[in-house]
Picture 1 (cartoon, rainbow, N blue to C red):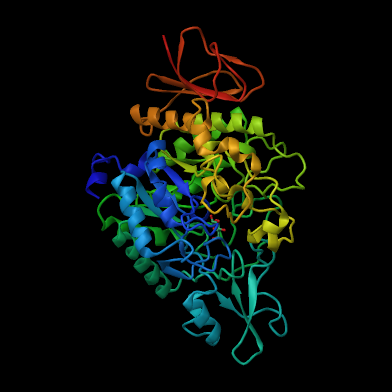
Picture 2: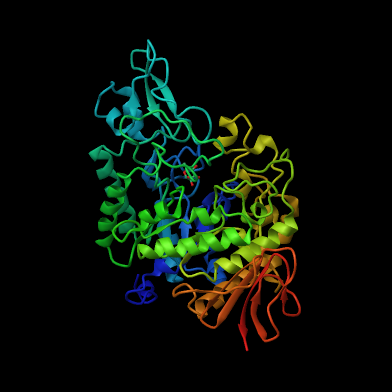
Length: 553
Ligand code: GLC
């Protein structure tokens, strides 16, 4: 850790301004050649990440799991799934990342376990009312013979939120709650044993040296007492963004857990951090997750969900700085992750689809790739000039679009199965990365296997192709990250500038930043000198769907 300590000056914790790169391990790099990425694969590509210029990586789950939800169904929180490697591989990856001054955050999934977790297996065998059942949310059914689920809640992945079990004597029995897939039973966080177990799991990874945790479903762990019926608002997104007073999202008591964890992390050196995945209806509510004694970061999903519209984008940035500022927290900007349509496609959707039901072969009005890429480059150019921390999702630095033509037979997302193919789900943003244009599986491995098929046209996005091109998206990201670091843009304040109704414009010290979201070029003035442009252009007028950093005079 010695080398890392030097990066964070006292009073300016690293997580306040860090650019954190999300690795989705199964799709990053595959050293074993079985078609699924792994930890040694990550280690082998750390030099590329160092060259990119990020400060930290977040790894989606690599713990032991039957992989029913791509690892977000954990069967053993203290071990590595064999498809990803071993604990020794993890330690090596961590040491190699730290040696390159890259911090490492791991994913923690505390809302639910896999149904293969030993506790759940014990609960199935135990009787109603037992200590074993008390670790999860088991209830008797409604109806004459308990044949109806305990309430009307609907799973995020489609279908009901309850599954009925068969009791030890072979009779139909109680029901258990699962916000997600039936293979992901929810823990009961009012249970002291559950709380103690997770304290111990946090310590397990902190002792190994991780710099923090991304906390999965950090708004869902506590359910309203009595589990009252609830009818979801039509069109509200299924993870709770847009909905108020949902009995399984954003309950007040969830904050007690984070206050407890905050103290636990504070016992460790090196500014360990918690980042919450909490989809909440308003920024005001989101900011509650990062009060001084709770989490350190929480993803700014209202920002992610904002359409390509100058007024809306300006408004969400203002409100974010305001609401997070009130609680003394940085905003944690994010445009893409493994759950949403990649922003190089999402920002060009003609119908609004912010959270993303996924895009597939039969989707009407598919987004235009060129428009999407221009907007994505502009959006990122704007984002990386904002004060606060930013998350990048693997592949966005290559300008990868959503993979929109994945044939049905390759699909793996439980959303696809639970909705009988009505929602394509998230496979399109999870396709393995292209590293080398002319290698098998584009250099993802050397066998050519890939758990999801890579589109043939991804040659143009391969890292080696883009490395050689100064106008590529990869070159833009490297420039952005280097300039951001050199100019200290991750911290400090912002001054708004007026560049007309179709632009978002502000100043950070002597750097002016503007993005044109309109339909006409935007003249910036004669005395402009560009520091960088989201796509190359001549003259001083900002083209449509373009952003730039510049100085004046
Ligand atoms: C989070 C993860 C998502 C997963 C879900 C259930 O939202 O980001 O990928 O499916 O939790 O664990």
